[in-house]
Length: 125
Image (cartoon, rainbow, N blue to C red):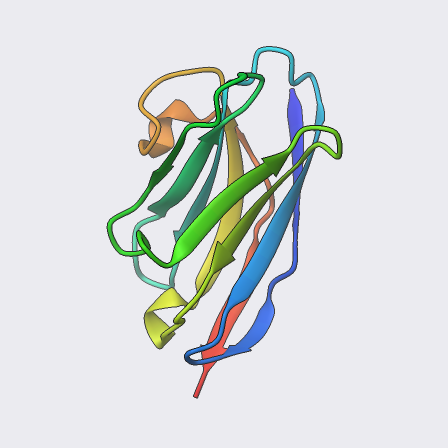
């Protein structure tokens, strides 16, 4: 099993930026994808971004609502994956979850077997 612990959430000003990180541990040898999802009250969990893990080539994928203002990155030596997002609006207020998968469709929630507890991000005006 893979353990995922998110950090870095909190209150952020509208128009500002956020950076959240995920510490990855446990049995990660078969993990090939690490991703961020988010969920706002009353809404379905939404795909934010994903990046290849345990692969040489750095491949990433972004959700439509965040593409162009979001960067996902990995640090294999520190076993972390981070998400940086700019131009924040109230629509970005959500709990942000880190997730791990061994394969499957990158933007599909069902592909991910292991999840963190989430970190709350609240955008304030």
